[in-house]
Amino acid sequence: MIRFLRIAFVLVMALLCIAPLLWMLSMAFKPPEEWTSAAGQITLLPKNPTFDNFIYAFTGEAAGMVVSLDRTAWWPFFASLLTATVGTIIAVVVGTMAAYAVSRHKVSQGLGLSFLQLRIFPPLAVMIPVMIMWAYLGMIDTWWGLALIYGIVTLPFSFWLMKAYFDELPREIEEAAFVEGCSPWRTFTRITLPIVRPAIASTALFIFILNWSDYLVALLLTRKEWTTIPVYMNALATAVNGELFGVKAAVGLLAIIPPVILGISIQRFLVRGLTFGALKQ
Amino acid sequence: MTEAPVQTELKRQQIKMANWFTVPSHVLLAFIVIFPLIMQVYISLTWWTPMDGEPWYNAYMSFSWFDNYIEIFRDADLWAAIWRTLLFVAICVPIEFALGLLLAMAFYEKVPLQNVLYSVILIPMMVVPAIAGYTFYLIFQQTGPLNILLSSVYPGAMEINWLNNVTRAFAAVVIADIWQWTPLMFLILYAGLMSVPDDQMKAAALLGASGWQRFTKIAFPRMKAVMTIAVALRLIECLKIFDPIFVMTKGGPGVATQSVSLYLYKQTFGDNNWSYVAAIGLAILILLSVIAGIILSRSAKSAAAQAKAA
Image (cartoon, rainbow over all chains, first blue to last red; front, side, top):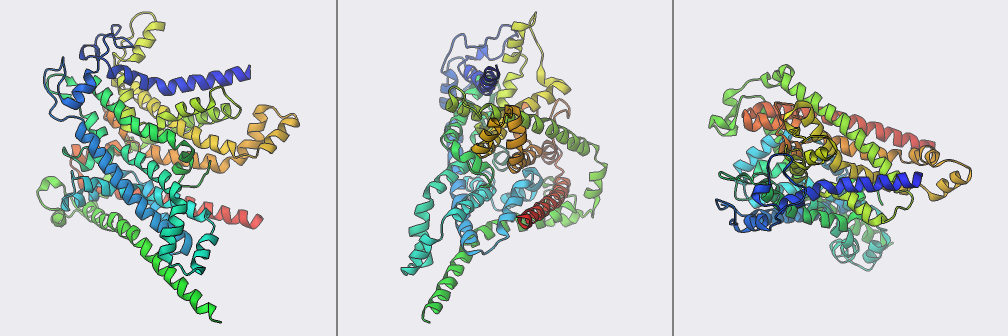
């Protein structure tokens, strides 16, 4: 009986986890006349399934759409990919170097706490000066401006995660290299980095997901040219068709595929990632 | 005798490299902390807004001393938003914790299709929060699937607009948050549960402890640190909540779902009160730093006490 209840509970929860996304899927394949209609007439599954929403999002033209879309989804997808990738590279490179220094040579011990503080504050409480600075430096609505802030806000994760790995790594290997006459820099690049390469890869993928998932920072620091996909998607509307429910569902669905696939592929790493390396699975 | 100087020379080189390695971090931190902090203090003491047409460094022209800070105490909307956010956190986090813990317990012994179900349950937390918000925006529409499903069990067509009523809109954003973040609680608590030594659980079972007793008497006391981390993570993130609410309701109807972050957004872009937002931001910064400091020093003390006892 308990076993039955247990399995039933798990199945219900799994269904509840997936059901909202199935509705997105259904919406993505519905033609405009099925997006909103009087309650009771709308159906769970599309009556006339069509790819028009996807076609419209990427070409700007589709049957049933009166006006063409002035901005297709290609560029926002590229903007998301570019800013999230460059932000990830900044965070991982800077974070790994600092983590190695702090873990191995006990310099700048206060760095870790400063990074943690960075994560506690609500972004909107500290964004006023950042917006002024970004405007002053001409970084509003540029890919490098957005990538830079992504790199900074995810730096705490890369620092703490990599520090946890360096703390675990036995020193003997590096010390053997020193005895052989290897310089500190050569030891770091030739011995240590290759060993922690899998850790760097997991950390980078994890941080990429975080950057890709951002909405607020892009909302504040981009205007038109470099809006990322979540901002673009939520603003999709035309004067004639109004809010483009189906197109938004189609774009949204495509935008969650990369983080979901990456997330599941590193699911063994997620506990560690989310807890800044404090917990291992 | 020749060994020692080589050692110190190596050590010196290592420290030198280590110091260079922390330079980029220090530069980025200075860039994002020191300048912005000075600017924020400066602007919070003025009436400056970008609408003035004056650059920010001329903000002293409308110097206002501490008027913005005094305003914080008189601002009923802000306090309402603070209480609303706390209520939101007080509802969401315990429910997410309870559901996550129950799920972790359900997964403790084998479930059919364990790996598939585990992955499926983790999916919500990987969805971009703003897109999760849009998903729930669709679900709670008057012509949305929720009303369709309710119509099939309830006589007559359901035509509830979930997002235009004060209570229902609040419930809707709570449900969206629970949907998205219960998996995170589950993930962390399950990892904690699996790290409880297997032999202790088996021994308890042999001694006749029921499943429930094994969890409450053996596993939970050993999971205290994990539970604390899971709850702390959710508390911090939940207090900052913005994306899904902004997408679902924009804080409405009226101010029914206006969290602190949404209030700050509205003050910044709706009312252009940049200096006031800077003042509120600084107050939040100081408050959170004090709280974090107290918690950190207390946990450091208890860690020291534990080390002494051991």
